[in-house]
Image 1 (tube, one colour):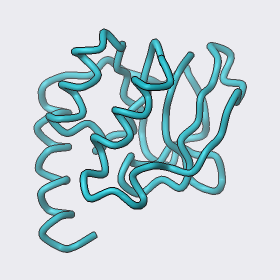
Image 2 (cartoon, one colour; image 1 turned 60 degrees about the vertical axis):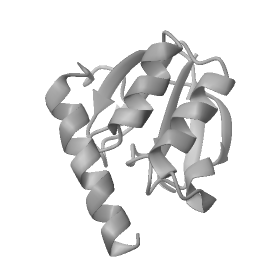
Image 3 (cartoon, one colour; image 1 turned 180 degrees about the vertical axis):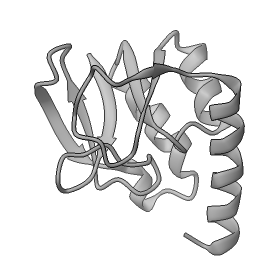
Image 4 (spheres, one colour; image 1 turned 135 degrees about the horizontal axis):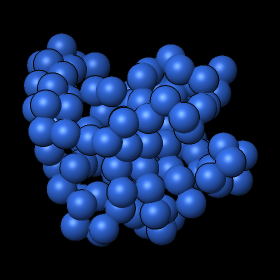
Length: 119
């Protein structure tokens, strides 16, 4: 099972801005779709990471800008494989890349910026 977040058009969206959290299989078929738990959470990105762990996802696709350090730590501790997509891309499992330290730093800075702005 793969966990990720999408917008209304079923395109990848940053954890903190997505409308839905979905569970998909390896073929990209949607198995479950629910309202994103980050919408009403003060800790947006970690709320998604915790929900994916709770749903027993084996992999998480984190759209670029989604994976702040707390989220990364939650997923790594649970042994979840983390892949990165581009926000706005269609639900396509071929254009994914492995997470790296630059992604975590960028996402953490973006999370701080969003909190300062009150988003």
